[in-house]
Length: 475
Image (cartoon, rainbow, N blue to C red; front, side, top):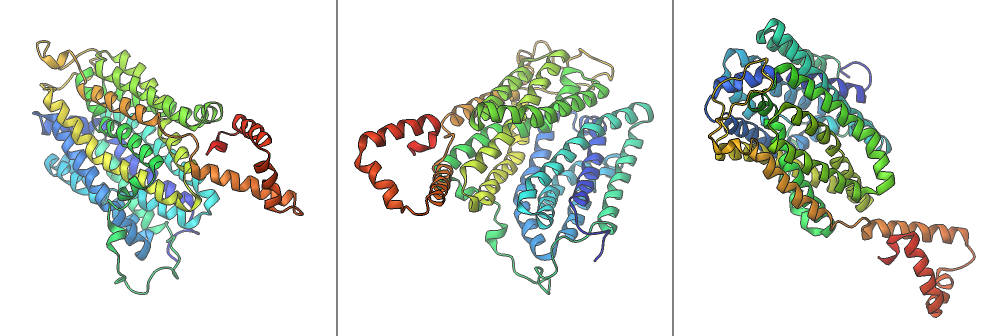
């Protein structure tokens, strides 16, 4: 078997870290190249580029996942990382080809899907959430460190060195997959030939979305995810450009902003999230996260000074608890044999938002005439690129206010999500019945139930007591 050692989570962690570390290094140079390549309608073009990339990823993810189930994970890790990193050296060779390749590379920008499948192959079910958390934390750590390193190299040595280092890191990642990563899919599972058929149902990106309306609770959760993640995806695509050109952040300030917000987000998701889940419950934690997200987006929309962005960034870190809380709520409200299906639905909706969000934000910037007329000075801390006579100067960030309205709708929808679904309550009741029967093996189920049905006063008293202790009883 090719590779070093047995397949492990650490192989997946190294692949993810190197890929996103390479792209994180390019945060500062990419902002300059984007404005130089598209001096007119910069935000619109950025939204279209990222939107096309995200939508292509949404369309291709199920197909690549199905093919990796047949042909193995290692070959598709190699393909996804290679084509995702191909645009990096083109930044200095030909910016037009660079942005064109970024859009097209969306077809293969699904490394996370293959990595999660790799991890699933080599872990037991009870270990999987911890392994996924390690992969996600590695992704966050790479983006916390690399923009700051890229900004430092850009300021001291120039952008050419940054692009060279990012290219070397990407090549190192490809070599690591080729030489060190062993195949995780067992040989006996894979077919003997490469001609094994793939059904359309496996490759249909909308298959998971078609199941949304079958359960009212899942439908409410999915609407909440769509309305809250759509502005989040758009924000990720344009916010650093917005900070650089509209608010006047220097490259070093942007790198520091990413690092600080990233560290605060990790603290919020590891420390505060567990405390809130225990003290106020799943649903209220989701509502609290949505409330922080509304405040953050409103602050981004009206903020015009750097200190306002820093304050809103701290709020953004607290809003990062929303999606983990929603995932826990989904897991709690789904049957054990439906966990994968429901989580797949949520992932599909997030993938769709990754395509729609950036394009929507770019279009709203275009509608409100938020344009970049010149490149902001590197050391500027309070320069704004907007003409004071322009109507958009009243609202510096219109898309962020639109996002706040979308999150408000998500908050209203989330109010109707039940804290306990019938499925989860049925499981609890069946477990309690089973334990009661095991504790009283000599008494049949009919003997246990009949006296309570005959004596209504006893039944009502017990029911009131159960309602005080367990809200599931009324279901």
